[in-house]
Structure formats: structure tokens, C-alpha cells
Image 1 (cartoon, helix red, strand yellow):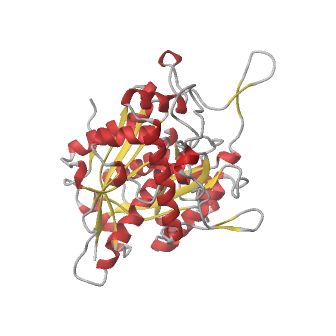
Image 2: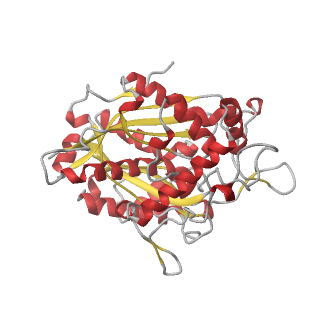
Image 3: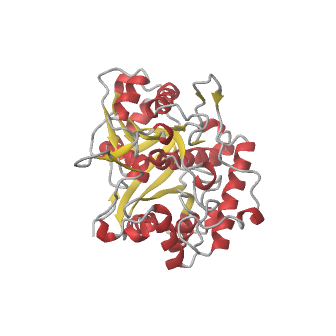
Length: 409
């Protein structure tokens, strides 16, 4: 079995990966306010803002590494970098690990730093499901055979749709409909509270829609949801099942990215704090239970670092479905109430290739907020806090990353 990738404590500071900035766009429902904004146009303002906020010279960027799942190909990372005004000397690399693409792009950039790649990287993910091209297989004769999603595994494995796999997890791990609905409702309530208090404002880059309107906030969290209303939703994937539209995420458009560099370079840039990347892991699991991939990856990663789940200050899990989120958290021994403190994809939406990067953006924002009261005093409440980001992936995989928040000053 492959071992997780460990970055701590062996690396010198000039090879220790650290995330010093993280931003995202508003996450909006498919065919909504950002419905005609193409993927590179979603991402470019985030990249430009990251450079401006950190003072990182564009020509000093070693690479732009971006995850994307259903785009039109053609290397959206390069396209977005040039759209953001970066010089032609800066390359771009697009990563496709489906739902995990955004987190895996950050993982790849962190490994480049750890390997001595030097410099700084922009890494993250983007998805414009609204403008994704139609896809079709050629046929020997006649019209093309259009399809909605790519094949993830050989048909001998069943190649289940995501919702069917979520039902499999619910059945195999005994996750009831009532618990799924309760978790989903809590996600909406938390996201609503966070939005109302301005929690998301500092991490969000407003975008201008083609209509000229400024899009500055998410549109997923629903104040109208109640337990009684959720109980009326019928199962949508398996007859007599427990997975409904109310306890599943919805498709969304959005982008998120980070500035990732070495600890030495971070100090040179004047960064005051950041997330040290301690280690990462990606695991493969039975495609029938693809939603469990994140738990297996996180389990191995935490064991390799001798970190008990109770030691984690922040946990961000992509809530594609309530059933798999609950099953994974329970396998890890993490209280579901402790994860996704400001809500997750059940409320905010799932912008496939961007979602993994959104997790990291949320962690950095929350870690900074936890340490904010300490900035003017001697105590540093958030300093040293451990955090975990994890996401399950189509085809039966999962990626996890372990971070430690650290103030440099």
C-alpha cells in the first residue's frame, strides 16, 4: 500500500510548502447569475486579486496549476493566467481528478515546492458547468452519441452514478434518511448565519456578470428549508431510497485558488501567516462506495502523522451528499457537528473542479478568524491549529490534506 506524502518535520524552510492567501468567487447555481461566464473568466479575477493581495510579482509565479472536471480542454489554467494579465512566460497546467481536481492541484503545487521547485505557485480549481461543452462519442454512422458524464471505471465495476453510490453508502453504513436531512438542514442554517454575519466577505472576489450586475454573494443557502419541508422530498436516485434533492448538493459555477510557496519565500513576501502543508494522501476505494474515498485517505494521513481526530481544530469535507459525509466522518471518529462550521456544499453548491480548493480557502479564512483576537495581544489562540481538508472523488477515490496554521511574526 502506498504511504501518504509527509512534509513535516523533515523539510527545511526553503522547501516547506505554505499557503499564504486563498480566495474564491461567489458560488452560484448553474444557469444563474454566472451562467454565461466561462471558466477562465471565473478564475482570472481570483488569480489577479491573489497577486495584488500578496504583492507577488506575476513574473515570479512558477506555474499556475488548476483543477477542472467538465470543461472543454485546451488548458484552462494557461488561458486564465493570460486573461488575468500574467506575462506569457508563466506556464499553466490543468489537472483532472474530477471532484478532487481543485484540492489535487493544491497538493501537486505543494509537492513541487517540497521537491525544491522554488518560487511561488497559484493553485486551485474552477468549474463553469453552465458553459461546459456538450460531449458525444463518435458513431460509425449516424448522429453522435451524446452523454452527460464520462465513464469513471470499467463497466465490470458497475460504474455507478454519484447518487446511486450515495445510496449504496447510506445502505451499507446505516445512514438514515432522518440523519441525512438533519445534517443537510444544519449545513444550510450554518451557511445562512455565516453569510448574514459577513463571514464569507473577506474570502470572496465579486464578479461582474454579463448583465453588468455585480455578483458578490452565494445563492445556494435556503432560508425556507425546514425539517418538515425536507421530509416531503422524494428519493431521486433509487426507488425507496433515502437520498433526495434536499440532502444532496446542487451543481454550481465557481472558482477558488491559493498562493502556495515555501516558508522562506513567504517571509520574503512579508506574509504574516499561512497554512503549512504537513502532508497529503490520495486513496482508491471500491467504486460502488466511491463516497468513502475521503475517509480512507484521511485515515491513512492522520495515522502517518500520529494525529488523533480530536486534535483537529478545523475539518472541511465536501458535502456532495449527506450520506457519504456522515459515513466518512463517523469512520474517522469526527463528530459531524464539528465539521464544516459555516456550512458546506449541501448549502453552497458543488462546482466540481473548484470544490476542493474551496475547502482550503474556507480553512485559511476560519483559522485567521480564530486567531484574530490574538493579533493585538500576546496570546495566539489559533496558532498551531491543525486542520484537515478532504473530498471523495468519482470512480472510487479520495484526497485529504493536513495543515497547520502558523503566524510568522
